[in-house]
Length: 238
Ligand SMILES: CC(C)(COP(=O)(O)OP(=O)(O)OC[C@H]1O[C@@H](n2cnc3c(N)ncnc32)[C@H](O)[C@@H]1OP(=O)(O)O)[C@@H](O)C(=O)NCCC(=O)NCCS
Image 1 (spheres, rainbow, N blue to C red):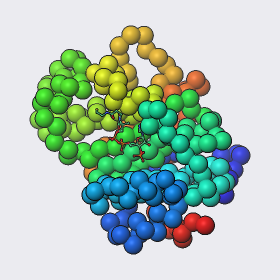
Image 2 (image 1 turned 180 degrees about the horizontal axis):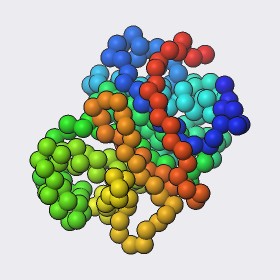
Image 3 (image 1 turned 60 degrees about the horizontal axis):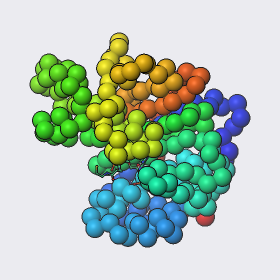
Image 4 (image 1 turned 180 degrees about the vertical axis):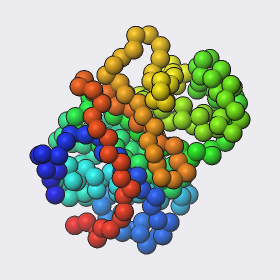
């Protein structure tokens, strides 16, 4: 089904706490390309294989809605930095992330760049690791927080940075300390240099134990964001 023309060209976020059932993974595999199936077979740990299969299945299902092409027929290719593009459609921006049982996909026809990232909110981050990705100001801000808030705040910073670097397409080749954040009225914004008003960053309510961050670059302000919890009610794709 094509997305109808009178639907707003907003940002759609789908979050999926996928099943741990191997029978389901095999079914989702049918929507993957031969290359993806080959890659899935190379994962040593079941958990990583399931996460990859679920991510690509969800991505293909959502892109299929936008393009009207069946999930398994979509051609995805990775650039030299591994950012995915959809062959035949450079207009539709999308991004994919997964972490411990959750897959997140964002799509937006009206953005110039889009990135999403998710991590479990209770992921332990050592002090040294915080130093390796937070700017001096961010480290100070974290240190001043009550201990019970610090872990989640450190994860929020990490996901914001990674979503931004994924939106740019460079990933962690760029030093995350160079992408620093502060907060205004509870909303994160990027600091350093002149503020670029095309960029928007949000933490998204996940309905789970995960922190989800979105980065979007849009000339015409931040498009509306709709978030939904994806349910796998599909039959195998043809
Ligand atoms: C991109 C990157 C930040 C992803 O981080 P991650 O926590 O491993 O994985 P996430 O779940 O957040 O995201 C995975 C998705 O990001 C996307 N992705 C990969 N590289 C990307 C890039 N350069 N730009 C945007 N998106 C990218 C892919 O769609 C991937 O999905 P896939 O596994 O199905 O192909 C990270 O892999 C990276 O920067 N890699 C390049 C540098 C590198 O290899 N460094 C290693 C030492 S630091």
